[in-house]
Length: 157
Image (cartoon, rainbow, N blue to C red; front, top):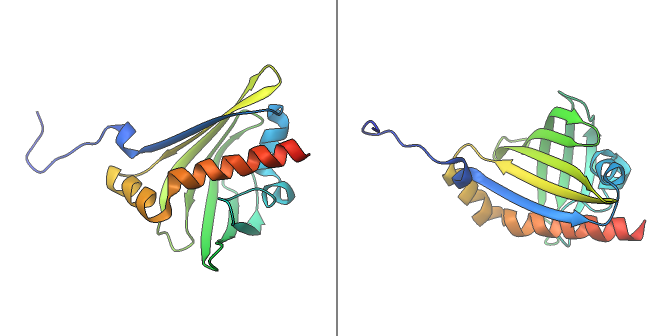
């Protein structure tokens, strides 16, 4: 029984899950996600570039960066790492320096015969916040394009 004025949302209503099978060993894919010089070469949707101000990949460490949009808009981002299991998993809280967008991301890297099955799982505080991020920031398409760029980067190196 639900009390009057109380609502719950299923986790699926608050999630974005994007998967990709990458033609690269998971150690390399994990390094591409955690090395400051490598991540700048592919992070973000098409047309974006990334400037990293700080990247400390350890529990409690921070990655502060700006994504520069093709229209000249800058998007401040701040990631705080919660858990790092090399080369299997990254868990972090992601938001802007202004606190505007906050979600928990879990990225898993699973070895599959020399390839890597990567899953990006983002969990938002509410279904409304997830929907807002999808609507305003095109988060699903942006995530797919980011993984497209990672896949293209891995094919080049």
